[in-house]
Image (cartoon, rainbow, N blue to C red; front, top):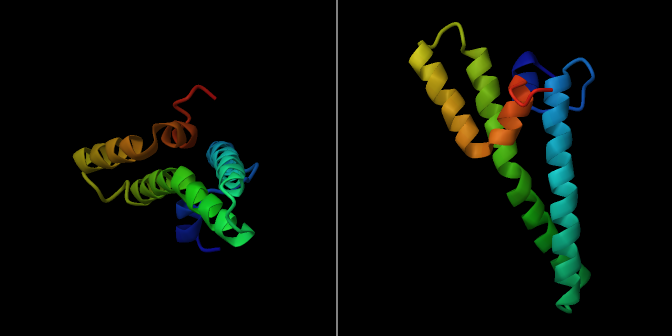
Length: 112
């Protein structure tokens, strides 16, 4: 994995505890979203493939914003030396609007 890819991907890596925290948060969201959506889809008498697709759609909706926020943070970090401070602030604010919890995990602002 290249350095650019590492900045844009959350991994459960002990070498990067804040990224790992955000990754585990999103994994928990994904697990919960999939389980709940799959349960309700199978209750509606749909076949297993449809239930699986509905559960995957719910999973993507649950974690998509977090991964987008993480990517914005990664881009911001990568461009920190070339962007004006106002642009950096704008990127950080935008990432926080997308998924505040993930941004706090990544930046350590959640107190961990």
